[in-house]
Amino acid sequence: MAQTVNVIEIENVVKRYESGQGVVEALKGVDFHARHGEMVTIIGPSGSGKSTLLNMIGLLDTPTEGTVHLDGTDVTDFTEDELTEERRSKLGFVFQAFHLLPMLTAVENVELPSRWDTSVDRRDRAVDLLERVGLGDRTTHTPEELSGGQRQRVAIARALINKPDVVLADEPTGNLDQDTSDTVLTELTRLKDDEGVAIVAVTHDEQLLEYTDRVVELIDGRIQS
Ligand SMILES: Nc1ncnc2c1ncn2[C@@H]1O[C@H](COP(=O)(O)OP(=O)(O)OP(=O)(O)O)[C@@H](O)[C@H]1O
Ligand SMILES: [Mg+2]
Image (cartoon, rainbow, N blue to C red; front, side, top):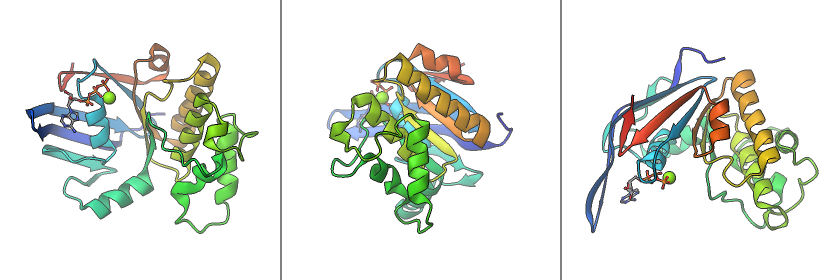
């Protein structure tokens, strides 16, 4: 159930990129929020600023103007080290390039973000997460021994290992067939309903929109209302 507290809140964010070609204003004063237990999906045409916005929400890049609050804390002026710590402890990422390490098995990849964690149940948790995304029989396979959809599910399990408050997903069902896509969406729904995780997704997938609580449309760097 969506609660009233905003786990992520972005106000009046402007993002300008400067390059040899001049200045591109990718976000032109964007307000955005997501509550605990809410799934919000960002849609919009190519180049409208979706990935840029997801990068702001994920603390992977900083706004040119405006503020970012995570869990009630203003993180806008945090140092790189502080942002890294916020990301590690509160956010989970499922991005298009899965970034799985080829020499590690599925379960080792899932464990990786928790390697600083000394608690004994890391491996059990990683196996449990793989089981939940339907990969209980693939835990010792390496990424190259897995299909594209299976790798994507390993990436989803890995995003959950640190029990994040927010999961950020860029096209989480992008390369998946119908059945696998259902498995992933069911797991995301369970996370938000049972564990109060907020999910922010970017997608073109109409099926994902059926699972989402709210849709936000970006056009040319602005939210449409
Ligand atoms: N590092 C960068 N330097 C300069 N311009 C950039 C940079 N990153 C993005 N842009 C520009 O900012 C705008 C928004 O890009 P963004 O990647 O957010 O779009 P998008 O909505 O995710 O598109 P797509 O659906 O194609 O992934 C685009 O015009 C893009 O060319
Ligand atoms: Mg994009």
